[in-house]
Image 1 (tube, rainbow, N blue to C red):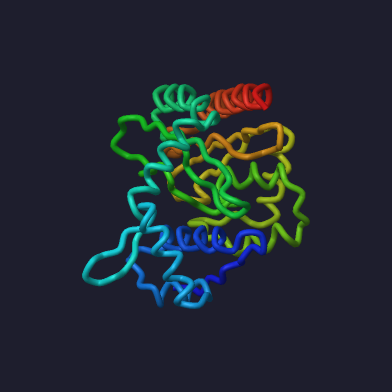
Image 2 (cartoon, one colour; image 1 turned 45 degrees about the horizontal axis):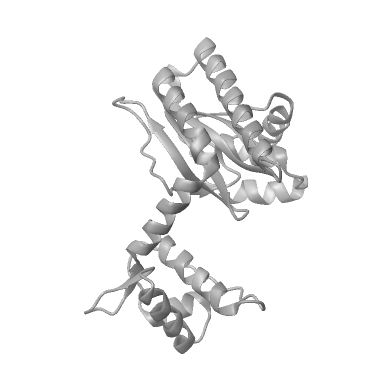
Length: 257
């Protein structure tokens, strides 16, 4: 595991540490003991234990009675379900996701920014096809990768040097040239929709369009399908319908703000 330093807020250090613990446990594939959590977050073990016990009392983490190691608790799932049930973006996006998935035999998702470095899947619809990408609610991926990444970059104001740092840190299956990627970002600014043709995942084409609220870009619609089935006029039609759906959702969100 990589070292993850906890940035403790001077306003609410306990809340910041609790959030750091939850994020850490959500990112690892195995249970962690108190000392392991404390090392990863660079905090004193006794302080870490107090946070873990408080989270355990609320059902947000679970402690194995024999190993004394911690994982996320079912309380997190309840919170997530409540959030999604009241998330206006998800509610507005779902009918569009269902329609796009059915019309184009694709996996259609709604994604939101988690802070500034990750996109999180918050809504999904899948066509009943044999070959498809397995996606689940809560799945995360780097904010600047894939077609959604081009949308996020197009809406932002990062310098060429800052974009290059993010580009170099991403893991593509067939990475585009950096200058090509920059041109595609500029194209998104002009046409309002992005395409990743096998760069992120070989054999799959991803179409994305930004969804904006009154505060600016906070998410996107991301459509994933087999490249052989998404070409020519079919791809052009998917781009138009994805963009139209994203714009309709954006208008509703802005009117509600």
